[in-house]
Image (cartoon, rainbow, N blue to C red; front, side, top):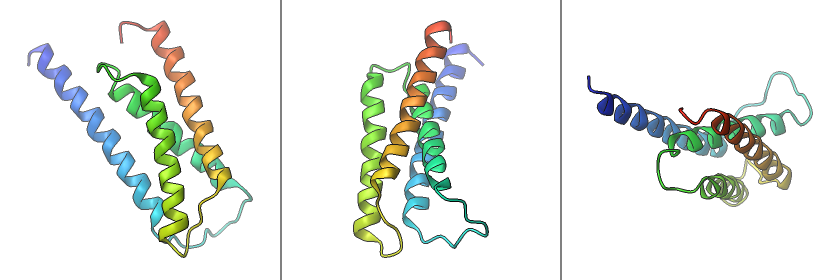
Length: 126
C-alpha cells in the first residue's frame, strides 16, 4: 500500500479514536453510575485528571498535521470539560458539577500539553 494512503488511514484512525473518547466521556459523565464498592476520598479527581490527559493528548496527536493551533485544541478540551460539568449540574439530578472537577480536568490537560510539547519537540520526525 502506498505510503500516503497508509498515513491517511492512520490519521483518520486517530481522529476516530479521539471522537470516540470524546463521546465516551460525555456519556459516562452524564449517566447514572452505581456506587463504587470501595470509597476513596477524592479519587474521582485523579480519574478526571487521567481522562482529560488522555482526551487532550489524543486530540493533540490527531490534529498535529493540521493547521489547527495546539492552543486552540487545549482550549477546546478545557471548554469541553466546563460544558460537561455544567450539563451535570443542570440536566441531571444524580450528578453534580464541581469547580474541583474543572481544576482536575485542567490539570490533566496541562500535563498532556507538556508531555506533547516535550515529546514532539525532541522528535520532529514523528
